Length: 120
Image (cartoon, rainbow, N blue to C red; front, side, top):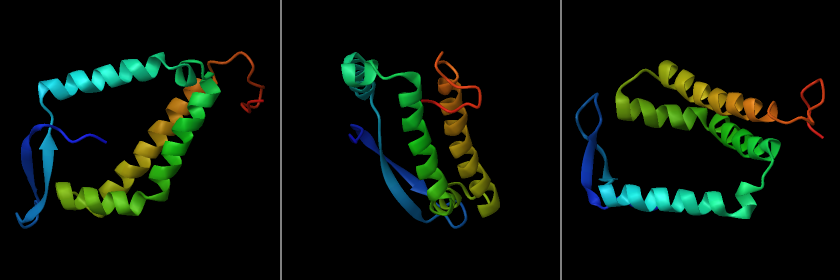
């Protein structure tokens, strides 16, 4: 993943004000680079020709990765935002659910889905 070219932004820990990390910011030219990369990827047959259920598989993998790391994500988010662990656990689980929801939406786009929702 590319680093932003704008100067770093200090991120403090809300509970005590100590330094959490320094993040590189994005400059307008970084946006252009990202958009160009997305357009290029979209034109690649390997992605462009994927059927909806194949794209859904990618979203399910992302959801599983989030679900498998809820505790780690929650710890990082609590440290960054000062929210409670209960709240950040719920937010991480919700993120996994959002990816699953979008995957299910893709799966329903296909004409070849069986009645029980399974594909091929």
